[in-house]
Amino acid sequence: MTADTQPDPTGLIAALDLQTPVIGVYDAPDPDGFAPLVTPGGTGRGPCLFDFYPFWQDGQTLHLTADAFGCGGCGRSFFGIQARERDDFIEFLYSDEGLRASRGLMAAWVDNAPTYRPEHDHVFVGPLKPDLFRYLRTVTFWVNPDQLSVLQHGAYHHHAWGEPDPVTVPFGSGCSELVVPFRDLSLPQAVIGGTDIAMRGDIPPDALAFTVTVPMLARLCALGEESFLGKRFLARLRSARGGSLA
Image 1: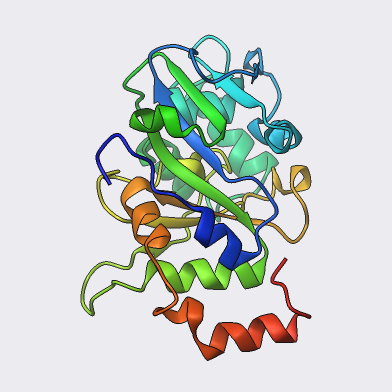
Image 2: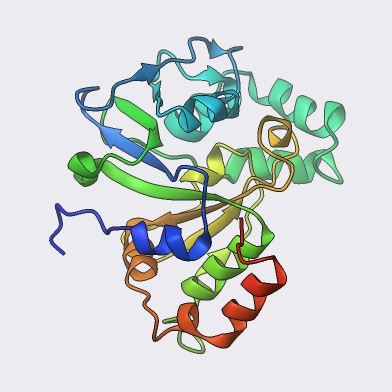
């Protein structure tokens, strides 16, 4: 595999019995190659990124820019744009939505939570585009609990005792979980996402997101039958589910 070649997820998708398209986040200089595109419009009061979940299933890619990013949470997550005044934002998250035990705790999160800083002017969220692999930043699998278990095992397959855990479950908006928690995209890391209750109504009730960096994708795609994918535990689980993890 070269730096310009996408790891092939075909075998992993088959092992998961995955029927939902795998989604990538791309940071690219222009929209060439990403069609068909859909745009959210809006700069703070537009639709949630996950309103476009059905579009991804239909092969379309969401196109985000600093001038058209939909809801304020998405603008903050992907472009560092604060669509609301700080105090108003804190009041909304703390008083209106009750997301922290105190205003101070909520303020500390607002003031310190990182955001993604794109290299280019365009961010795309949609089906994988192997020809545009050089712009790929993260990959998300939409999975049920059984499929999540398989990916969790895969992420730990090369983990050595004492190393930082390769999988985390961060707090944040659903869109932020697609890229923001990764402080270093060059490391093999994964995040369990889709946990933001504000967006869960836009995805199937049994779905969670398992988002990985490109190095972690390469590790997962390299798993073979000699790993747990070809052993008894997974075979027994598949049998218990009637022959499929889907």
